[in-house]
Length: 181
Figure 1 (cartoon, rainbow, N blue to C red):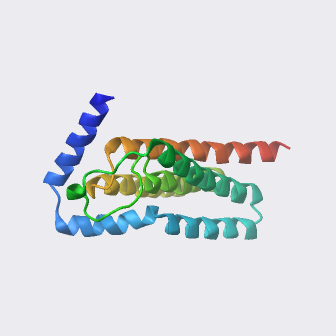
Figure 2 (cartoon, rainbow, N blue to C red):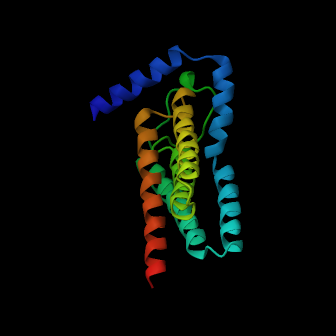
């Protein structure tokens, strides 16, 4: 455990040492794509579009993925109660607990599930790879932004990614089983 704490701190310090004001502004904007209100809004739009296209299982799957991620994050943050990095490292002030990263978990849950849908609904390999690449870059950029902005430790971000991926799996399992019945 001490190794993780030391690695978290050294990563935080290294990114802080190379912080650039322009990149801070860009990454604050990127980070917004993982904010709760953004994710909830985009999820609602995705669910509505999927319902209108009569992809009911996918609509429920994305809702399950994002909702499960949100609930898991609330429970984990409240139970673990890990403090955020020292305020001196934060590019802007964040509230509540640090572990795991909600921005990253929610982004992985939503954008990851949209990647899953892409692989099951788009026949063109080129389009699938392009959309998957864009989704992966968005998730990675959000994860990096949380580190670079000094509002999370590396282990918070990794845990957020794992939570989000697990929730995509749960949503995908729902789709699989709902189509079998």
